[in-house]
Length: 361
Image (cartoon, rainbow, N blue to C red; front, side):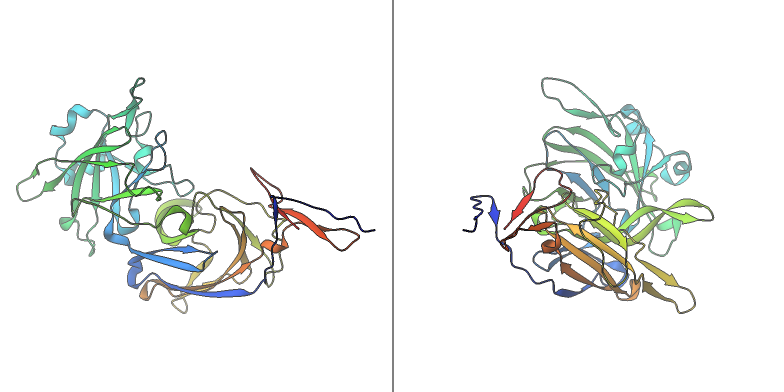
């Protein structure tokens, strides 16, 4: 008599076809849009890239991170590490060459430009119990590059993060070049309880308002956007704004060179670095003035539910349209399984496992 294997509660029955899904997205002319894409639903959500200027991590009372929207040409400088200098920060046009420029990390969401400042926490210091707040000590200046690269038309704002305690309290002012003075201070608080399903809250200094610039954390795997990276140049690297994809912090991705997508999703190294896909799946051909994609470059995207998708880019048109295309294939069923003598199959994924496994029967 055949021995039957009964698995209760933990067993997941999976029936899937590994059909490729062709996906067409558009970031718009000059990459005016940011796109959030979810593999499990084949759904994309679009936000205007210029709607936000600063992002505040909101998914933890104990963790904090502040990022600048470098994709729309905003630079961050540390002007002083003494909060008492707020009222004496001088003309940014003449002083900016003496200040230190700071950049977002392209490997971790929680390493924003403001975490790169000279204070213990980048922008501030820990106050200790009982409230455990972080108070600001560093004064920053933001430079908004003129669209026509005319330095006389650049916009400058000074910014001071006053406190983090269940949210971020900050003040800012704008440089008036005609009168050679700063505007009156504006003070705001962005609380963590806003948009509870999102990873970041966002603020627009120009409109003096909070904005929503991302979907719920469970509704996206990749964000197509512009970001600063260390770009190869003459044997070294320079900070340069590129266009590509950053991954959700709950997603891991493996990169693999293979022919016709014949790789094994089990035999991959899945990485947490948010720019694992990044920008270099494409290159610009100076002879044709057009982009080409790497034909043998594939990615394996493991989402928060440990489903795995094979990603292969097929086209990229650049800033003239912002159009891009890729194929996506659910390869979860290819994760490790074992067949018994009686014909039953049993296995688990992911393999190797990190924190949890899913059983298949």
